[in-house]
Image (cartoon, rainbow, N blue to C red; front, side, top):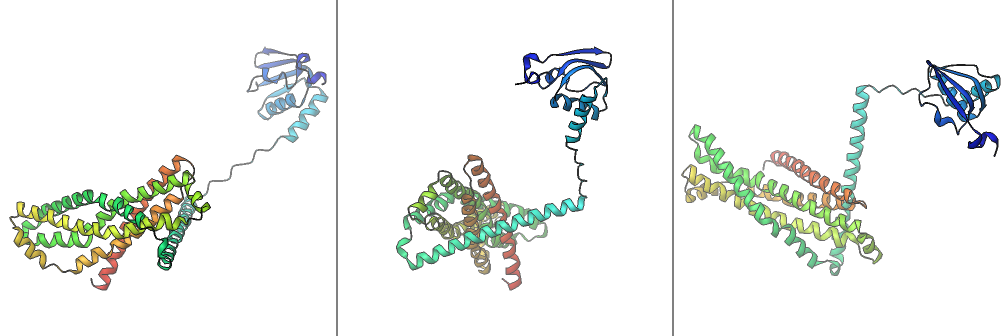
Length: 363
C-alpha cells in the first residue's frame, strides 16, 4: 500500500473564501467524501498535494459543470485531462416518435398479442378434440366420475342463480314492454316480445355470461392452483395426460350442462314474463300460453343451438388461462380475472356472429 492509498496519511483541508473553495492537502479517494456533492463556482488548487484518479474525476466533473479551477499544477492538469478524455460522453436522447407512429406501434403490438392468444386457444381446442378422439378409441380412459362431479359443480349448483336471473329478466321485459306497447293498444304483443327475446337471445346469452363469470374463474383457479403446486408436472411424471384428466371432463361438463341451463333459463324467463303480464296487462295464463304457442319454434332452436359453442368457448378460455398461471399467487389472480373478462367478451362476440349468420340464412 502506498502513501496515497493509506487513509491515515491522507489529509485534506477545506477553506471557503466567498464563492471560492480552497483545497489544501491530498485529494484522493479517502478524502473525496469531504467535498460537497455539488462543486462550487470556483476552486483554488494551489495547495493541493497528492491527487489520484478519484480526485481528478471530481475536478473534471466540476470543470464540465462550469467551475473555474486555478492554481493547478501541470502534473495534476495532465491527470485531469486524461480523466476528462476517459469520461463517457452523454448520449443525446432520441427524438420522440410522432403520434401516428406511436399509435401504429401500439396497434401492432396488441394485434400480435391477440394473434398469439388466438393461437393458444386453437392449440387447447386441438388438444381437447384430440383427447375426445382418444377416449372414443379407448373408452376405458374416460373418467366418468370426474365428468359427473363437474356437471354438478358447473350445472346443478348454477341452477338457482340462473333461474332467478332469467325470471327477473322476464319480469322486466314484460313491465317495460307493457309500458311502451300500451301507447299503441298493442299490449297483446308483449307475449311475442317476451318469447322472442328470451327464447332467441337473452335466455341463453345471460346464462352463458353467468356461467362464464362463475365457471371460467373456477376452471382457472383450480387448474392454476394445481400448476402452482406442480401437480400437473407430477401427473406427467406418473404418465397421466392432463388433457384427459383435467381438460376433457371440465369442458365436456360445460357442453352437457349449458344447454340444460339455457332451457331452464327460457322457462324461468317465460314464467316471469307471464306472471308480470297477468299482473300488469291482465293477460291470463291460458291466453299467454295460447299466444306463446303461436311463436315459431325456430326461435327455440336458434337459442339452444348456441349453447354448445358458448360452452366450448368458456371451457377452452378457462383451461388456457389456468395453464398460463405462474408460480406466484399474483399470477393466479391476474389470470382468473382475464379468463372471466375474455370469456364474457368472447361469448358476446360469438352471439353477435350467430345473430348475423341466422339472419343471413333466414332463421
